[in-house]
Each structure stands twice: as C-alpha cells, then as structure tokens.
Amino acid sequence: MNINQSLLIIYLLVLLPFSTYADTNKASILSFNTNIIINKDASIDVNEVITVNADQKKIKHGIIRQLPLDRNNLWGLLTTTQYKIEIITINNRPILWQTDNNYLSFIIYIGDKALWLSNGIYEFNLQYHINYAIHSNDNVDTLIWNNVQNTWTFPIEKATVNIQLPDNMTISTSSADIASSNPTENMALTPTVAGNKFAVETNQPLMPDQKINIKLTWPAGFIATKNRVGIIETEVFASPMIMIQLGITLFFYLLLFLHSQSKSVWLSK
Image (cartoon, rainbow, N blue to C red; front, side, top):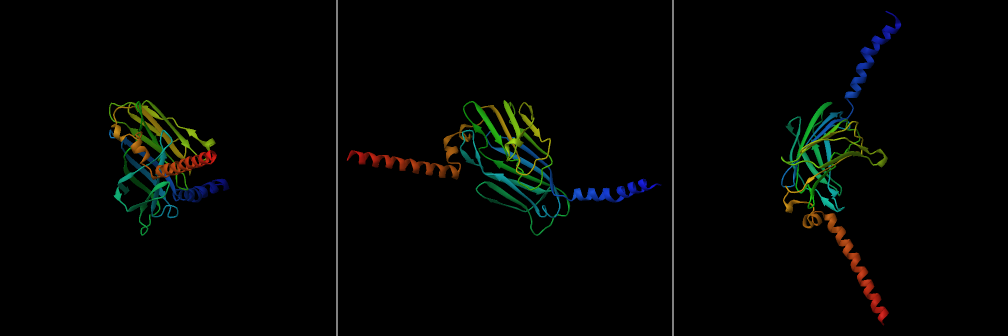
C-alpha cells in the first residue's frame, strides 16, 4: 500500500463522515408542502407540512410560522385575513402552540420552551381555515396566494403548492413566480394545470425574504355573492387599516372643503 492509498483511506474513514455529520446538524427547512382546497362558500382549507432539520441552535424548541395579515386585493385595497387554526402537530403528535400578531403578520409559535428538540428531522403539520379568500367580480373568480414565505434565516430547500377547485370547475389562467426583495432576482415558475387542479414546485432553494406568488382565475358562478371579497361591505370594513385610511382621507377632504369655504367668504367681503 503506497502513501496515496493510505491518505485516501484516512479521508474516507475520518473526513467524509465528519462532513456528513456537519451537514445533518445544520438548521434548514428540508421541504415545505402546501395543499389548498377551495370551497364553494369562497373559503379555503390549507394544510402545510413543513419538514425541518433541528440543530438545537436555530431550531431548538420548535418553529415560528408567520402568515401575512393584510394583503392587497385586485383593486389595490387592503383586506385583513382571518385565520382559524384547526390542527398543529409534530411527527403526527399534538404540540403546544400560541398565536400573536403585529401589523404585518399573524404569528404562530409552535413548540414548548421547556422542551428541547434533539438533533434530527421533524415534520410539522399545520391546518387552518380562511373565510372570504376568493376575489371576485361579475365574470372571474381569483385566488391570490403568497403564504409560502421564507421568514427564517436559513433556506427552504424545496417547496410545493397544490391547489384544488371544486369539481366541475376549470382553471382559466395561472401564474407562479419566486419574488425577492430585489426585483432583479424574481424568477418565474412553471406550474402544472389539469382541469380543477394546480401544482407547482421550486427548482431551487427558497432563500430568506423570498416568497412564492400564485394567481389562479376561473369563471365566476359557484361562489355566493355575499361571500365574495369584491363586495364593498366585506372589502371596506374587513380591515382596520382600511378604516384608518378612509378616516384620514375624509379628514383631509374636510379640511380642503373648509379652506375653500373660508377663502370664498373672505373674497366676498
């Protein structure tokens, strides 16, 4: 056995296992799979399966899931999304969780601070319900979905989104892309559409601050008018931010009106 063969054996026995061990102990989101069922009452049921590699550093008690609260509709108005959490599990077992929110996100803290996750792979399952999820007008219904956002400090290795409409409905148009804080890094994705089913997956890791934007349209007609997010009653009063914006706008219009009136009175003297 020569010196080169000896060095090769040492590398295989020592360095290679160490490299593999180092990779398996690095925090990451191995996969982020989303399944969405669109209901005839304009609500949706969402099931997220997030598989993580815990490292006892960045992922030690559980995970934090941030969901967008306010989003723009087709007309540029803000609407507030109301989330109803139904099930949260880890490896098919119940786990403690609590929620909070700021002005931008609905935050779910999943895990128990008293318990540490040992190094390894864990599967988190989240199921939640959203009412008034469909944007509508007289001819077209639309789903805009951007909840697959990387709010962590490490990449999502792979993400998939599957969406199913009610039976006998057919998707008319669809689009999907990866959006970044830097618009030059945006990248289009190629979805698969078959009848009432939509599917898309990433072909590269989803980096921090990146998200997947999805838009589907189909002919209007199966959603009750009162449940559409295009009706002024549900649109304007759905978000506290909208009420604040309207209040400020009306206040400034009132000031302009009073100013014009006072100027007219002064000119008439």
